[in-house]
Amino acid sequence: MSVNTWNRTENRKLEALIKAIELASHSIICCDNDNIFPKRHRHSINADIIKEAKLVVKVINRANTRDLYTEFEDRLALQNQALDTLADLEMDLQIAFLALKPNITERKLDNWLRLIDETRTLLKRLMKANKEDYEKYCSYTTIADTTEGE
Image (cartoon, rainbow, N blue to C red):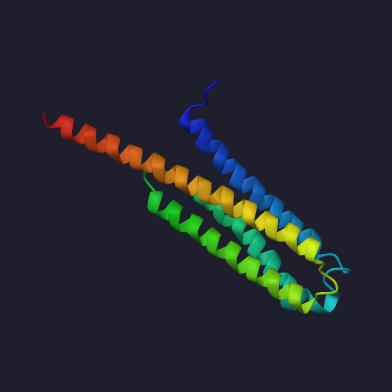
C-alpha cells in the first residue's frame, strides 16, 4: 500500500527529531558517567557536549513547527543551524576523546559519532523532502496564478 506524500514528510520530521532525542539522551548519560568524564572535566567539556546535543533537539523541533509553505526560509535556516550544531558537537567529542583517551574508548566514540551521523542523515533527508514539497507547492501556485487571469 502506498503512503501519501504528507505522511512520508511527517514521518521524516519525527524520525529526525527522535534520533536527535536519542543522541541527546546518550550524550547526557555518557557525560554524567564518572568513569568516562571525571568530575574535574564536567564544566570544561561536558557542559558544551550536553548543551549542543540538547540544542540540536530544540532547533529541529522549532524547525518542525514552522509551516513548510509560508515559513520555508525560516524552517530551512533552523535546519541548517541544527546541522552546524551537529558539526560542533562532533568536534567537541573529538577534543574530549583526545583529552580523555583512556576514559573514552574508540568504540564508545564511534557509537556516539554514529548517532550524530544518523541524525545528520535523517535531517538532510528531511531537508531534501521539504525542498521538493516546497518546489511542487510553488509550481502549483504559479500555475494557479496564471490560470486565474484567463
